[in-house]
Image (cartoon, rainbow, N blue to C red):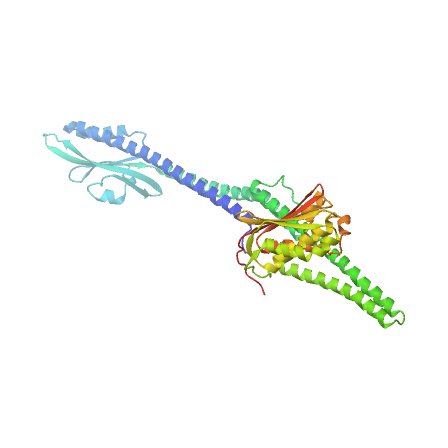
Length: 467
């Protein structure tokens, strides 16, 4: 099974701590061992110098007879010292604790050079040998070999005991580091566990919960912020979906209720052909209203799923706006409103969809313009992009409603709702069309002047179309 993040961090703590302690222990052990080696070598060299000095003084027959006694006196109290002295013929002339030496050294006539280490009878020794040239009684030069051994069992035992304690300490420190790492990681990852707990209990009814940021570490705070932001977006989306469902039911209930009422009334008694025709005509208007709503909903569903066609035509926005102004001329005259189109700009896009977006803005402006006012449509090429603005004078859209004006089935106010029978999908369709062309649409409303501003790029990158 994969390890948890807490366990991984705890093991990492233990590994790092153990590695550092091992490194420190190795360096410390080498330093102590080297220090003891220097002390032992210094003592061996000192004994060799002492023996060599005594040998140099033993240049008479009497002095040579007294040499063993002098050597014994020189090493009184040095139980850990062993000395082996051979003459030029390899014959042992003096031996102090000879059993301490290696059997090989005792057997061969000449000692080796350098420092030697060995173990014998459970004890550890370090030795050094040297060949000394001496002046004999008759003035002739002689050679003698001197070997000195030092019992270092106490040093070795100390190093072994220290090593065992050190490794036990490292193991204990690694365990403590693992426990501390687990404790620190467990506490530091508490916000993640709360994220898991909240996420496991999320439902449409519990989207209002949020994580506290105060006790979260810096590394986790970004996750907490992102998670809270996601919850906020989910709550907002669920709320919009709930409102959307309620709006659909509300919008469909009116025409369906009208159809049922008129049908029930017409069936309540026998009627003439003209009366039935009148009822069917009225029902047809309700059916057309439902059909327009369904068509608009299908268009928005395609837009949400990226199934709108790729725009690839050259569209003159001013020409489309003028054509729509002519189309709405009769309605404008009826409402005593005039329409003015200014500017020129051409973009790459889908002409029918762009015309529908402009038509929705213009029809919305006609419904909410004051009699005797003018609707201004300004088209401008800004170099990097193109703008199209539709400005009218009428009711001001409340500031708190402006961010939601492009939501489906949303109407800015009850007063504006009375201006028309639309289902509140026109502006949502306009936004979907503009976004499909890579643009943005926004609204500003203040002091009785409302302006919808469309910003579009000159060319729209191709999008994959899902069939």
